[in-house]
Length: 167
Image (cartoon, rainbow, N blue to C red):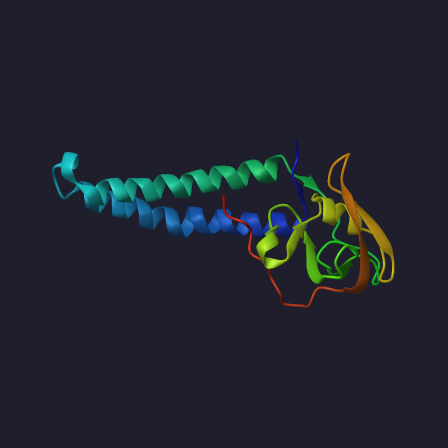
């Protein structure tokens, strides 16, 4: 399965890889070297901690490179007044009248606790391409779904940047 990413997501991932390779990696290698120089490695906690941090950094680099290599690049453009990538949509749940705002983002940026829903999630799929005032059906599975009413659609504010989720 390919992750759907925008060109902006890929650029952010490439910048993180560069930072990790050129800035963080040399610092971690130096920390391992210094800890190793302290002598007996069998009881050297600093050495093991430095090695663990170095390995976590290398793992994150490999993960990001794999994500870029296997990504399906999707467009982040949509009509001004329709729900789309990086748009904030205010919806009303018909079942209970609850009103919430969601920002539609790619899987890498998704964080439902912060109101960031993935374009691949049931809500994200249902909202895409719809406009304020429309009623949409969110299919959770073959047996269950619910209706939302779109109250408003807002474009992304310039300068606002969401963090990539760390795995």
